[in-house]
Image (cartoon, rainbow, N blue to C red; front, side, top):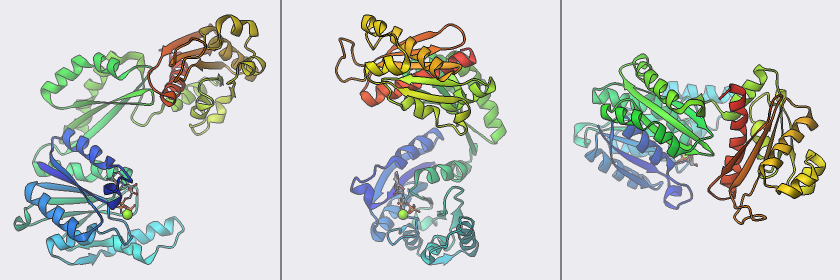
Length: 419
Ligand code: ATP
Ligand code: MG
C-alpha cells in the first residue's frame, strides 16, 4: 500500500505549531509496511484542501489527513471531502446523538455548531474517536477519482494516535491483504544510554531485521530509553505470541535496566515498590532544586511513600538543614561523592524515612570550583550500607538536571528491586 499524508492547518504553515503528526504517522505507517510517498501541508482553505486531496488520491492508494475536523469556521476538512467526491454533506443522527450524549455526560451544553461534527460526506463512514468529540471520516473514492481511500483524523495528536492504532492501520492492512493487527509493547529502561541499549540489542535487532517482523525501535528522552517491539499478525493473540520471545531476549540482554513496560513510569514503580514494603523516602537535593521531589509526587497516593524534600542549594543550607558536616564540605567540596552520601543520610534521618536520596552536581555551563559541568553525584542511604553513583552527563542545564533526577529515582528503584 502506498500512502500520502496531508496535514491541514494554517498554523502549521505559519510555523506556529510543528507538524509532529506527520512525523508520528510516518513512523507508524512505515513500521506497518506502508510506503509513505509524500507529505503535504495546506492551510485552512477549501479549494486548496480539495486540490491537495485530489492530487494525493491520484498518486497513492491511501490518503491520511489530519486537522480541520473541529466545530469552528476554519475546520473545513468535511466540506472539502464532500467536494472531492462531489456529494452532499449529510448529518448522521447516530453521531449527533453520541455527540449530545458526550456533552450531557460532561454536564455541559453543546453549542449548536458542534453538531456539524456529525456531518459526513454521503457514502463516507465515521472513524470512532474514543478520546475526543470529533469522529474521523473514512471515504472511498471511486476509480475516476484515483480509487484511493481517504482517512481524515483530528489534529489533536493523542486523538489521532488512538484512532490510527485502533482503526486506520488495521483497515489499511486489511486492504493490503496482509496481517491486519499491529501490536506494540514498550520496554522502559533507565540508568542507561541509547547507544548502550542499541549495542545490547544489536544481535536481536539483526535477527529481526532479517525477518522484518516484529521490529524494534528506540526512543530516548529525559534520561530514559524506551524500546518498542511491534508485531504484525492476523490476530492480537498471534501478535502477542510473536512479541513474547523477542521481549524475553531483549529483557535478558538489558538486565536490570528494564524497569517496566508500556505505561509504567519510573516514579510509579518506585512508589509501588516502596509501598509494597511499607517503606518511605526523603530527599535532599542541590543540583535538581526540587525536581526530584516533583517526580516523587507525581504518582497518585505519593504521600504514602514520599515524606519530603530539602532543597539545599547553598552550601550553608546543606549544613544547617540537611546536617552535612561543615568540615566534610570544606575538605571534599560541595560537589563530591562524600557530600552526596551525607545529603542522603541527612534527608533520611531528618525525615525519619526508610531511604534517603541526596543529589549534588554542576549543571553548567561553567565549571564550579574546578569541577566540570555535568558532574553529578547521587547518594542513597538506607537501613543497610549506603551507595553513591557518580556520573558525567552531557547536555545543557535542563538535561543535566532532568537526567540527574531520573538517575536518582533509578538508583532507589534498583535497590528496591535488587537490580
Ligand atoms: P479540534 O476538534 O480540536 O478543533 P481539529 O481536527 O479541528 O480538532 P485542528 O483544529 O486542526 O484539529 O488542531 C487542533 C490542535 O491539534 C491544534 O491546536 C494543534 O495543537 C494540534 N495539531 C493540529 N495539527 C497538528 C499537526 N499536524 N501536528 C501536531 N499537532 C497538531
Ligand atoms: Mg480545529
